[in-house]
Image 1: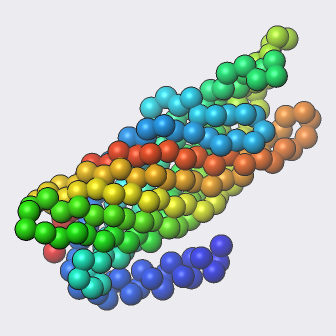
Image 2 (image 1 turned 60 degrees about the vertical axis):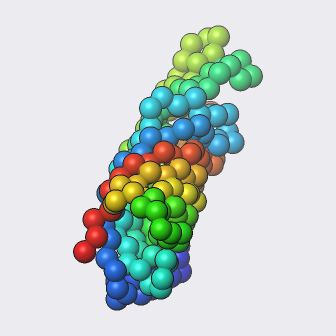
Length: 204
């Protein structure tokens, strides 16, 4: 993790001394969300989940922008169907990723400017939650401790007079711990989804 943070810091420093400044504020809603959980079988039957983000970018060379971003991502709740006689629901975690972002814009004679983008960073996973497990004999509640992990996103979109709309595939990585079966169990609970984002670029 330390090596990744050093690399992210170096890339961000290069972006800060380039020309062509932009600050983007963006909101997004998630589509097709899924917690890829290998213990509780928590395939994400999600209720509403969303993100709020801000990015600072500069144009390094023609059509290529580089910068840093920070987001708050609310992952909603999880609920699984019946699996080996039990069902599971509850809250796992939300995420605050800090990341380096890169963007390539396809400039043309139109005012509509398509682009592709990539994010890479570290996800601080917060709001440790609870899981309720139900079976034929009743239910039990377990506290969840979510670990931090990597984060990445890949997307494409279009900009029109500063307004942006894009679709991106994003993943937050995490290991979680719970106290089921009278012991501490550790398992993966990576959150993946497609995010529809809308925002605005402030140039200066």
